[in-house]
Length: 183
Image 1 (cartoon, rainbow, N blue to C red):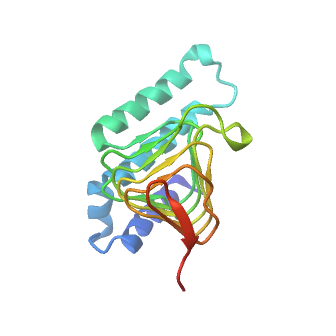
Image 2: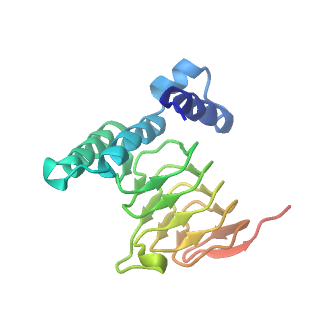
Image 3: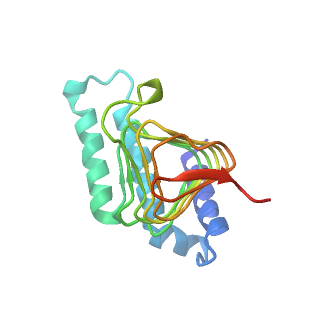
């Protein structure tokens, strides 16, 4: 996908999910979560640069881009994280996405979310969680370790997820207990 088309898609995703988002230009200019995602794309490309020896500093450059974005937006996304299309980070201050995290398409993260490690490695050698497509993670929630949150699930505000969450579930509490979503 052409980079400009991807930018348009990102802006449209924000406007679809946030009723406060007014016009395309305003959304592109004032949404720090959007800026963090765009910076992550640059940092991730540097992090994964094929054929670039590490001694040339591509990974250091990636971390510098990531840290600059963190300073400007309050959102920290490690350049090694894998982020799907149309991620919406709403009021992103304090949001952290770890190095081996995988975030599916059409996910929403609210402020203060942590997709972090808890020491050691989980399934498939991952230290950080995997979110399926269409997952919503509420404000202040922590999803920790190599767990998987299934597609279409919702993690409630303030929840602490340390075990897998089946697709289409709601996970709430500390520790989070998944239950089926109501129709």
